[in-house]
Length: 186
Image 1 (cartoon, rainbow, N blue to C red):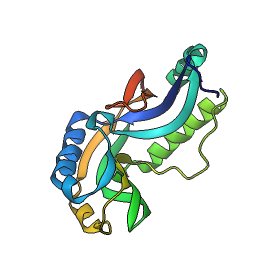
Image 2: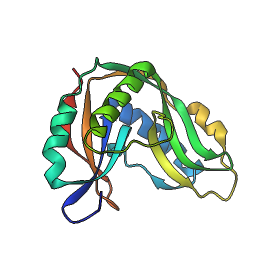
Image 3: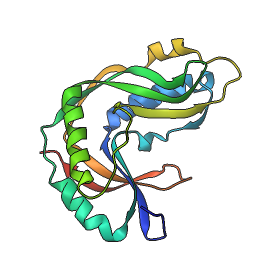
Image 4: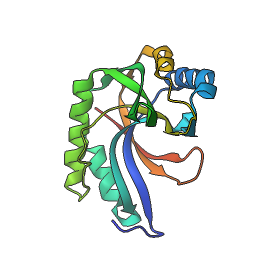
């Protein structure tokens, strides 16, 4: 969709509980000096992306929210599973917190959102879905990335995802994401 003043950049996400956010932020702050990334995710922006939608006009918001409201799945038990990265080991693009738990349920939910939004003209990404929480982007360290630090990342912290959100991106703001709709999963 073409970007104009009457559109918003949107995505569907699962929010992260405050206690999980606090654990991730504690780990980030303890290791930030040793992890030279250009952009750190604001803790209020931690989430699990389900589908990036892109530019959406104000006129399409009602039908989008009605469609999202119609998606019903069982709550999903999730758990933090350490940290990892996307990109080359020498200089990763993205530092992320990993997920475990009911990943089959999470993938089914992802597919439900894809199918529902496809009917509205949204095109899903072609790369395989990989649930994660982005912590930082664009490694800029002078030395090679030290992956041993990842071993101390939070793991085993459980929660139940029972709702999802429609998020709006405010580019160059911090925090940059705003929840503009919240939907129960069941």
